[in-house]
Image 1 (cartoon, rainbow, N blue to C red):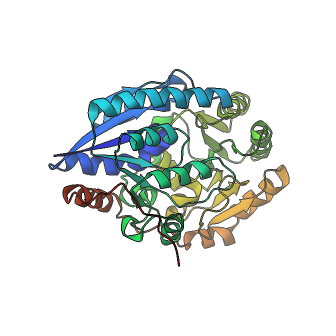
Image 2: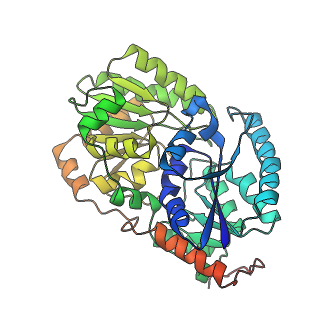
Image 3: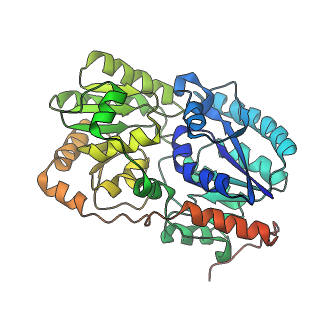
Length: 386
C-alpha cells in the first residue's frame, strides 16, 4: 500500500484539497497521511482544523508553528521552524508521495524538505501568474521541486513545460476550485442566515481582500479605500472573510473589524469554511476584493467579480471579471458597472476557462498510476521547448 501525504496549512487551500483528500481516503489501495499545520491551528484565524475534523478525515500529524508571519522576520522564522518540524515528520511517516496545492510561502519549507528526503511531489495549481504577489515566485519554485503537475488549464500547462518540466508529467484536468462549485451541496439562503446570524434580505456582496505582498506598505491604505466605498452603499450589506496570514494581513483584519463595529452593513468572519463561502458567493449580487476565488470560482455562478489592484494580475479570467485600481474612484466605477443589468447579463453567460469540474479523481488516479508502476525517476531532465 502506497502512503500519500497531503499537507494543508490554510482554510482556502483545504477547501481546494478536500475532494483530493477524500479520493485518497476512499481508495483501499492507498494510505492517507494528512498533515495539518499553519493557520488551521490558530484561534486568531478561526481554528479551522475543526472543519477538517468535522469532515471525518483522520489527521496523521498536527504541526504547530510558534510565529504567525506578521512581519518579514516572523515569516522567515516560521519557515525555519517548519523546515525542522517537517524533517521530523517525513522521517517518521516516510510517505511515497507528497501532494500540495497552490503558492503559499509555507510550501517552500514543506517542499524543499520533502525534496531533500527524496519524496516525489505532486503540485496542484502550478503555472499560474500573479504579478502582484510573492506567491508567483513561490509557485514557480514549487514547480521546479515537483515531479507531477496538475495545472488548472491548458495555458498553465504550457507555462509549466516552459519551466523545463516534461509534458508527460504535466496533466490538465481543470481546476479543483471549479470542481468544488460543480459538486457542492450548497446551503439555502435561510440556512446561511441561521448559520451566520444575519439577514440576507438586502442585496449583498462577498468581500475578500488580502495584502499585495510585492507592494510595500500599501495594504492598510488600500483596505481603507475599499471600505470608504463600501460604507457609501447603504442599500447593500458586505460580508467580509478575513485576510490570511500574509505579511500585513493582521493589519487589514484590524481595519475591517473596526469598520464592522462602526457600520451596520459590514460583517466580518475569521473563516466561513468552503460550504458557507461558496454558498454566499452563489447568492451575492457581486464579489469584490483581490482573492483568486473571484477569478476561478465566482464565474461558475454567473456572478460579477470586482477584482481590485494587481494581486491577480496575469491570471486568466472570464468576461464576468471587472479589473479596477485601488483608488476610491476606480472601485466606485467598477461596483456601478457590476450592478448594472447589462453587465449582470454578461456575467450570467460568461465562460469559465478553468475546466468542467472532474478533477480530483483524475489527479489521484494519475498519482496512483505513477506510484504503482514504480516509474518515478527524480533525476529529471530539463525539457527544452523548441
